[in-house]
Image (cartoon, rainbow, N blue to C red):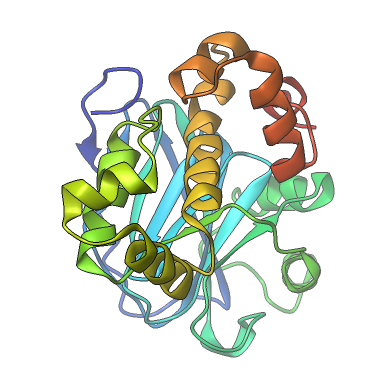
Length: 263
């Protein structure tokens, strides 16, 4: 069930044995919230939506992208993709030889206005476009844009410790839960100090920083849908809109209102 109460539907994974070209576009309009089964493929993928918010989950954590961002999924990394209602997906599959990054790390990258328009244009190309002509040259420009796209902090690392996984799942289901780590320690049967050390070891974030990032990320879908900032702030566990706006600006470099408008 999504944050707006709609039931999510399964989104099938394309049955591709190989890519027809070094860059291949997958275009989908999704009226309802959707999810893919866990899967992997031997090529890289830029998971992107020109409208809506998507979340890519791997064993390492979650990566969130509103329309100003995209998620790079490295080749052969098992992942699941969830998208909000009304999402307009314009994902790109990138062959191994054309992949802009080395290694298995996934990341969230910024999508410039130029890159966004290039993706929209490429999405209208024929499946087997002319690599030697203007279309192939546009693809080369797109790959250059991807190589130079700055990485941004819209990921949420997943702890490996089983106790912390239970804690994080509970917070993801209810971001406004304001129990302290000391209170959670009594629930989980471990000392606050033990949990604090494990959190830092597994996520490179303190418990407080991880929870704040979760709250801010959980706000993105509702902001993109036009829900009032005050309502989103309170639902995410903030005592006042001003505190939420200040935290949002520190994390994302823009106010919630500007972010929702595509700033």
